[in-house]
Length: 77
Image (cartoon, rainbow, N blue to C red; front, side, top):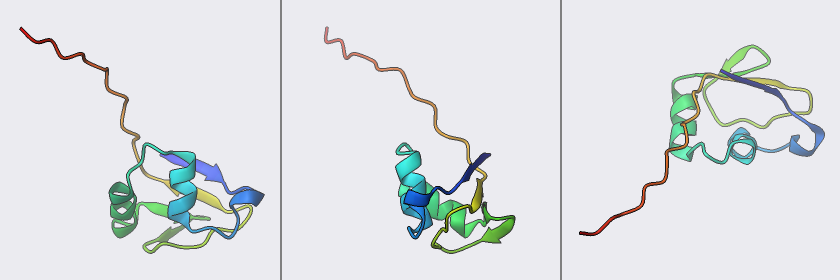
C-alpha cells in the first residue's frame, strides 16, 4: 500500500496525473483498474472515479509497484 499527502504544487490536479508524476512506472491502465476496483482512498473514503486532489489530502493506494527487471543482452550464435 502506498500512502502520501498531497502537496501545494499538486493541489487542483487530477488524481491520475498526481500518481503518474510521483510513480512514472505505474501504467495508466493499472491506475484506472485500481479506480474501477475502488482500491483508492481519499481521506479514508473509497473513490471509484478520477477526482481532483486538494492540498493536505491523504491518499491511500492499494498497489504493489512492479519490480525493475534485469536487463538482458541478446547473444547471437
